[in-house]
Each structure stands twice: as C-alpha cells, then as structure tokens.
Amino acid sequence: MTKMLLAAPALFIAYGIVRLIDGTDGAHGPGLAWTVGHLLFLLAFFLYAAVLLHLRRLAGSPRRLANVATAAGLIGVLAFVRVIVIDLIVGFRAADRPEMSRIGAEYDRWPGDLGLYDALTPSALCSSWPVC
Image (tube, rainbow, N blue to C red; front, top):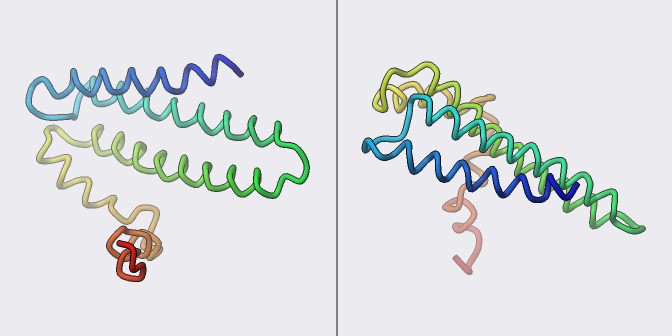
C-alpha cells in the first residue's frame, strides 16, 4: 500500500513533465507524448481509487462518514477517468490540434446528455449561492 501511496503522486508528476515536453512545439497533442502523458494520468487515478478503497477499510466503526468520503472520492475519480479516456480517443482519431478540437466536440456529452454536467457547473451553482 505504501508503494501505491507514493506511486500515484509520482505518476502525476510524470504526467506533468510529459505535458511540458508535449507543449515544447507550441501545441499539446496529438502524438506519443499526449498518449503517454494521459496513460500516466489514467494510471494515477486508478491508484488513487485503490488507495481510497484501502483507506475506507481502515476506518473504524461506524463507517458512515468513511463510506460517504469514499463515494465522493470515487465519483471524482470516475469524472477524471471519463475526461482522460475521451482525451485519449480524440488524440487517437485526430491528426493535429485543430482536428482534436473538432472531434472533441463529438464527445462533449458522452456518455449522454444527462443534464448533470450543466447542473453542476460553477455558474449554475453560483446562481443559487449568495457567497459566489
């Protein structure tokens, strides 16, 4: 478990380094650096999911708070995994950055128009919260 706790942030750092390398030509993606970086990012999130589940098992009784925190964390992991997978698909399909933008629009609502994406945007949330 200690290795996973160290590997997940190390993979994020590796992703950041690859992303910097990818941007040296003035654009990010598509290509080898784009793909490698996103695969590192994806693996980091899978490790974070495993860490979340392990930490939940370590929680004492009652586990209500641990269950809620784990569920919230896993929802966040799934949201990032969705974005990363779409980025990888778009990167595989596109020949250049402008084409990535065009193809990416096809996936904006994947896995469907659930209405959830619009409801949880900062502008939608701030319209109902006076603190924004």
